Image 1 (cartoon, rainbow, N blue to C red):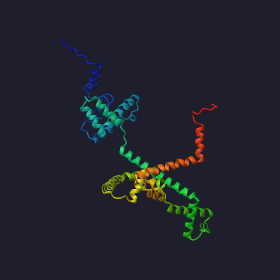
Image 2: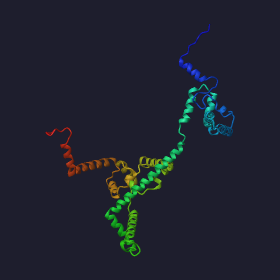
Image 3: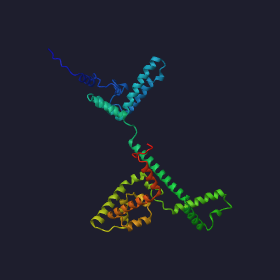
Image 4: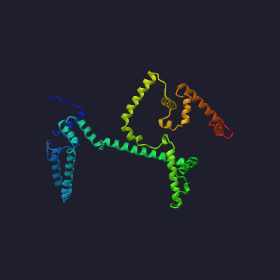
Length: 337
């Protein structure tokens, strides 16, 4: 009597899938139940050139356009798809390696599916190329935006009368005659006006110290250059940091104006570009008040907040807003309700 061993259904399915007869091939993967090497009439030792040569010969033989009979054409289409699929798998070294691994390790059923679909689903574009393109686009937009802000600042100064008059005086002193009489006999009125605007703009660009976000853009500030210079920037930061610790923490040296302004900027919570836009008179006032000392800064900040509240309280517009909010408070009940 033989003992009958009963296996669960999922175990039988798994064993059948792993065994797959003696073909060692899985349905739905690569060439299906056919061997890709047999489809192209090559073997596993064949080189890439031999595989390409075999594909061209078979493709020429089974190309659908070669056959005119409907049935023969239909069979040729099926055969041609099989040949193309096999060639697509075997011409790529990585795909061929995965396929050979499946032939040598048929028991790793789920691993084969993972390898196959990972390669099909994974992006074909090199990630490095995507990064390069992305950084380049950001850098171009960054540089263009900086120029747009700078142009808007210059156009604003051109509309301010005191700056225009001052620029006109400088141009007049350089030329020794009035702008409107410059080359009067050679230029039309429109051309004279255009020339005058160019000169005034040039003077404003030379004399106006525009800082902060509206400063004239520089190549070194774009993302690409910042990334290339990042090793140097990081190194200089650590050098500066250790020098600061050594000079002012260990050696107890007094702060210079540069160090004082750095501490004031940190207390104010400003970025470097924002602080650069602060007028020199204001910076000197900060130094006179010794705002680099934390206690002095806290006291000064409270005084500024109280002063701002007082100014708002005395502002007629602010009083009107407070009166409106008080009279229209959501929880206030009136007879109109």
